[in-house]
Image 1: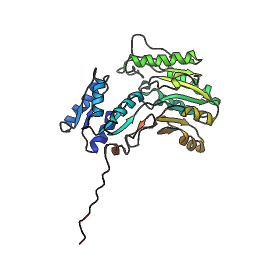
Image 2: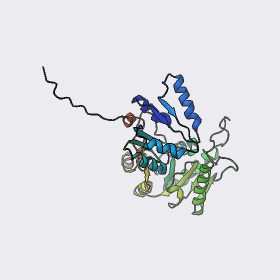
Image 3: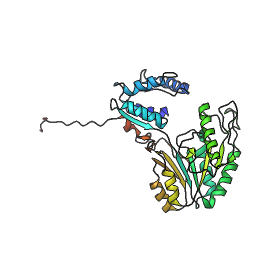
Image 4: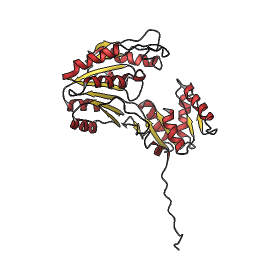
Amino acid sequence: MITRKLGAALAAGCTAVIKPPPETPFSALALAELATRAGVPDGVINIVPTLKNVVEVGKEMCENKIIKKVTFTGSTPVAKLLYGMAASTLKKVSIEAGGNAPFIVFDDANVDEAVEAAIVSKFRGSGQTCVCANRIYVQSGIYADFASRLAEKVAAFKVGNGLEEDTTHGPLIHIRAVEKVARHVDDAVAKGAQILVGGKAIPNSSFFLPTVLSDVPANAQINSEETFGPLASLCKFETEDEVIELANNTDVGLAGYFFSRDVGRVWRVAERLEVGMVGANTGALSQASIPFGGVKESGIGREGGHGIEEYMNTKLIVFGGLGLR
């Protein structure tokens, strides 16, 4: 997350003050050390680790007039707070906030490819990325087949120590993340969902078993909140119009995915999804060279691609009185 922003900032000639999350300060400090070894001058990259003074540091960075630009990746509620504070000086802001990515599989999709893509999109990093599939909608004609194949694949995962070769998935970032996944599972099951795989945390740890739920109702919390964990939520749909309405029924719009072999549908659905990034017949859409970002309450601005523009201002200079000879 830091390098996405820092690369563009440095390329634009900016210095940077970086506040890493209190849970992960050491990777940011290591990045600064590597920059020093690479010859980046002192004072160009500055790291401010935080633990108990997170709010104070964030407020200072947003309201201090010396700082000309604020960029943030994180939850939508925190993004709104920072955006509000940055408004006090009308400084430039770019935000990559929360997501609630739909993953749609139509009847005419290649089911094997869709299952593999769902695993990539949902379970990489144990589901802890902002573009992870959060709501998986499968058309009724292939719903049972898709659910069975996905559950079989997920059941083969091994949760454990990342230094062991056969481990496929590690822990969540903290116990609060585990509690949120458990809350989403419990809520969905209470409303009628079925657990196909997993469904529980490993006691006294930050591990949650990779989980697949079927028959998740529309009013389940997982459909309105980003889980950020290894929980695949399967919902059945009948028509294209129905699933587009379900997919767009959220305040955020970062990424969306869908699978179909109908070329007309590919263009139609890609245009109708209210997201900043669409993966058509793929579960991976992020790379350094393309613009990354969302619409609605998922953020403002873009990273990657032409993201250097977020760290620059346009200046007009009009010369007069020079004469022509």
